[in-house]
Image 1 (cartoon, rainbow, N blue to C red):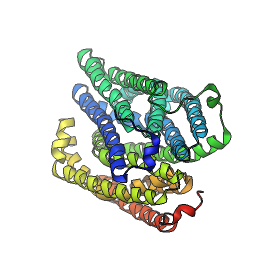
Image 2: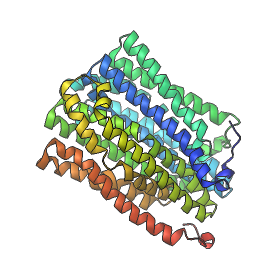
Image 3: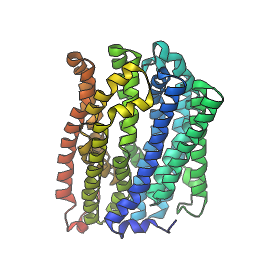
Image 4: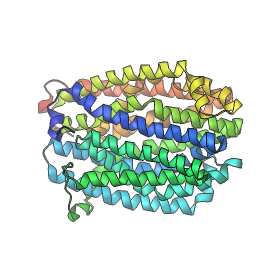
Amino acid sequence: MAKFSSEDLGTKSISKLLIRQSLPASIGILVMSLNILVDTIFVGNWIGSIAIAAINVVLPVSFFIAALGMAIGIGGSSIISRALGANNKKRALKTFGNQITVTLLLTVSMVILGLVFINDLIPAFGGKGDIFEPAKIYYKIVLYGVPILALSMMGNNVIRAEGKPKFAMIAMIIPSVGNLVLDYVFINLLDMGMYGAGLATTVSYVLCFAYILYFFLSKHSELRISLSDFGLNMPILKEMSALGFVTLARQAVVSITYLLMNNILFDLGGESSVAVYAIIGRMLMFALFPVLGVTQGFLPIAGYNYGAYKFPRVRESINKAILYAGVLGLFVFAFIMIFPTEIVSVFTDDERVLTDTPTAMRIVFMAVPIIGIQLIGSAYFQAIGKAIPALLLTLTRQGFFFIPLVLILPNYFGEIGVWISFPIADVLSTIVTGIFLNREIRTKLIPKSSNLKID
């Protein structure tokens, strides 16, 4: 790999930096999404459609706990990027040490609580009827590996903050490939069913963590922490928590969304409707990989240049990130609109699921070409350390718009009301984010902004 230091984030061409940062991020997200997608295909074909619904029920719990690691990773990485931009290596090291300590404390506690309340959580998240038992089997084995996953998610974001996206990409590819191989071995060859699916996922987390540990112990990392860095520093912890809470809140809302969707759809159409949502959810993770990759690549560029007072470069990175995300979103939109039936047929041969999913998927993806504005806009405020606007903008789509819509519209339109809630929420949240971001650009990121003081 070509030698690259964090200083390059403040000097190289924005277009080249975005491609350099976004391409590995996109590939990593693609492989991770393919892993989830193929995992669902394997489970659906080798175990059954009920197993797909069972995994979907478990996702909110494991996502939320794993999100602790992601939240700590992104919150701390914002500090690290700005500290490196300001040439404050000591602050960057202390932040990284605090990230590790907090991740372990929180995730282990959450795993214990998750196991204690297992019989209450699964039904609450839609694991009812025939779904309960396979969901419980999968839930228990996956939960044991969540602290390792949280550490991996945290470490991956720190690697990006150092400006090393290729290593972050590899860290995402390893567990994805590992999970698929282990799925084949545990489910198909050894016939271990849902337990095998869970075991494959957990072992893949361990493989990911092993690689990330190698990175930070090798010469590739600029962060050489000592034991003293693990001691909690309250000012850093406060800022990291405020910024990380943005990500945690977003993931918490995702978990709440899964809870509502699984229960609403179960009441409307039973297990098959839950399976329809499971397939659409997987496609949302998979198909949006290039847009999410641009967002991930944008974060360290914006954070570093903001910390270095290079505001014109920040403005340029915003404009180009939105442009790239919009173009990629348009390709995703066309793909989903043209091939929905072919996509669904890969997952299952269940006649009702095959009939209902294509139309629902087309509706859900209707506003994809414009969501880059919402993603980049909320990511910008998180990158520069402005927690409150980042939090509010992050919550607009699912928290402020989608959840109220999905609680109201099905009462009038039935199951179709669930699906039309997605594009309506996308459009409304994009408008709100666009207004905030435009005001920020025109008032803060003006050409002669070098004299401005960073909040």
